[in-house]
Amino acid sequence: FVKEIAKLVNKKTFTIIKESKENGELYGSVKPKEITNIIFDQAKAEIIPSQITLKENLNKIGIYNAEINLHSEVKANISIKIDKIKSK
Image 1 (cartoon, rainbow, N blue to C red):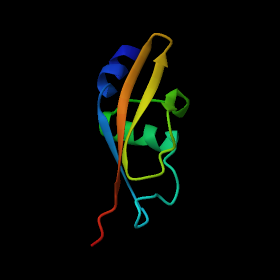
Image 2: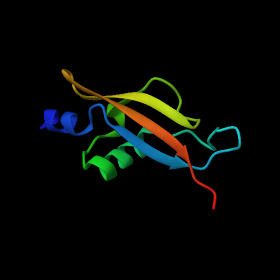
Image 3: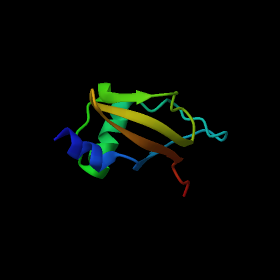
């Protein structure tokens, strides 16, 4: 079952749309809880926030790498793309 989840998410990019300042900084950083919600919405995979390892703060527009520790021997690597809300 864990391997199925790994297959669903491994090497995929999940996009999160956020409000940002002119310089590309977000008004708050993206937290693991928000990432798990996006993964569930986009891939129908259930992951708990504590399984996500972020190597840096997700507080600017850009692409970030994260690791999901599903089991001691099963990991998945994902990309998180943070994009700004397009103004109308």
